[in-house]
Image (tube, rainbow, N blue to C red):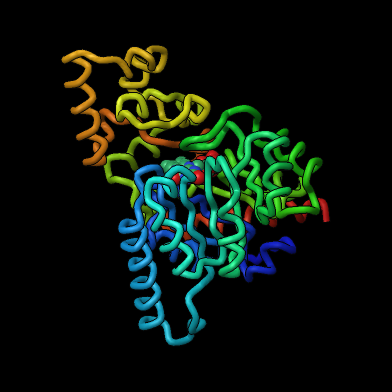
Length: 339
Ligand SMILES: Cc1cc2nc3c(=O)[nH]c(=O)nc-3n(C[C@H](O)[C@H](O)[C@H](O)COP(=O)(O)O)c2cc1C
């Protein structure tokens, strides 16, 4: 594999300066292990439906994948590769054991997304892990750095899943580097889906990239089978930020955090009528029940698939090692043109 390092990624022993985003319902233990074995930093993600029990299950998957790798390759390094865990802030309030379980697993990095407070940073540091969070404005980056967050992820509006779509990734990265560069590690997120965009954010000064969509279709991901054809067929301009699915599921995501999804018939019908979808009535109750059942079953004929603008670059189902290798190789080829 081609090696591409920034000072930060070298300090973690990574072979490519990429952190795989902690995507709820996608980034399980097997996925995180495959990413870390391939030389990036794998994360286990617990989304808004996360719990201590679900995290324990995925940690066991990580351990099982590690044991299987060790057994099949005697030449491999003996110790488990570095990994991270990503949680959603209000998940900690709902299930306080979630953070306890995460910290007991001794991850190298703990990310708390959609953070309303930063009292968790001290607990993360106490187990020797790095504390990370995603930000959407330079002002939020300053608050996070002041609170002792080690890794600030500048997440642009191009990104898949939930986020505050305030600024495009490159202008946000530029502003965040200006505001806190040198005080915290800065990773770029949102639309980093190829060696080209990785080279761009590294050239701009990022310490690495935080990548979600580009890894979603891999066989190691928990992505439901019905979502993969949607991902492979979509183009970046098929994606849209909307709170419609959250409204249909009755989830308490603030309006500030819509999710970027691949547009489908449900989105076409409801994106402009989200308040109506939160209302009451027999017909709506029935529809919401149908939607919730489809979501639990991972049925993406009705429920839109989360994905960022980089989804158009997904053309086949490929193992994460192959995708990450291509990221590194293509970025190095581009960056060398200026050497
Ligand atoms: C399917 C999916 C699920 C996600 N779930 C979470 C999550 O549970 N917690 C979180 O902090 N971010 C989540 N995100 C957002 C990512 O952390 C990240 O901001 C985004 O994937 C970066 O943009 P990209 O998708 O263009 O690479 C999710 C993203 C996707 C695509």
